[in-house]
Length: 163
Image 1 (cartoon, one colour):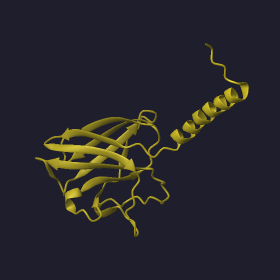
Image 2 (cartoon, helix red, strand yellow; image 1 turned 90 degrees about the vertical axis):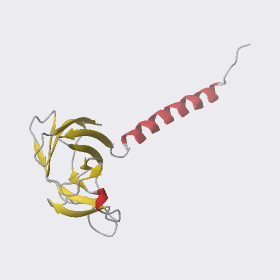
Image 3 (cartoon, one colour; image 1 turned 90 degrees about the horizontal axis):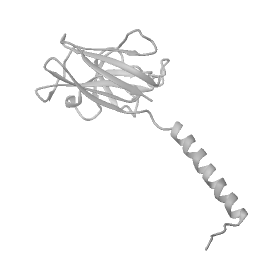
Image 4 (tube, rainbow, N blue to C red; image 1 turned 180 degrees about the horizontal axis):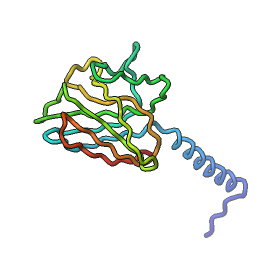
C-alpha cells in the first residue's frame, strides 16, 4: 500500500524544513563567545588558561575586583573587548596570589606577538582564593598561540582555536 501526501501538505512540510534550517543557521551565528579551559605547566606552577566572554570590573554589577598589575580593560571601553583571557596559577595545588605573570599571544594570520596588559584580580565576593591574572581583550576567530610566564620560569604554551 502506497502512502500519498496531498500537494498542499507536502509544500507545507518542505516550507517547515526550510524555515527550521534557516532558523538554526541564524541562531548558530548568534551564539555566545566560545569558552576555553586548558592546563599547562610553567616550571613548578600549574597554569590554567581560561578564555571567557569579557567581564566587568566596574560598577554595580562588577564581576571582577581589580587588585593590582595593569589597568583593567573596560567592557564598554574604546578597545571593545569580546573575551576575558586569564590564567589561574597554582603551586602544590594551592592558588598563587602574588605572582609576576606575563601573557603574550599571536594569531597565525598576524605572525607577530602582542603582550596582554596583565591585571591581577579575583571574583567579587569570593576572596583571594580566586586570584587570577589577565585582562579583557578583543580576539577574532582563528588559531592562536599563547605563552604564559610565571615568576620568570620557562613559559607554558597553549595552542587554541576560536570560532
